[in-house]
Image (tube, rainbow, N blue to C red; front, side, top):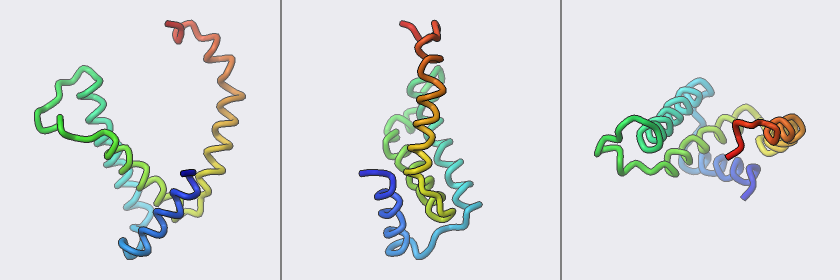
Length: 109
């Protein structure tokens, strides 16, 4: 699945099940909340914080999917072609970062 298809699927889901999009500010707040849930899992599971027993059943993939869903909602409601933007960003990063990362001694194992 490409990003354009994902945006279309989200739009169809909103039309069928969600009635309408939440406004952009509400979705931005939701995105922040979902990113916070991802951060909590990462900090406790992979970082130095101890993981509470109640957090051990949390699914990182599900939380990342929540972030993606809200991100796709924001892209749709702001008429952003996220596929085109992603492709452009990847090209930019490739040109800018290839030599920089290969020449970074901190990245050598």
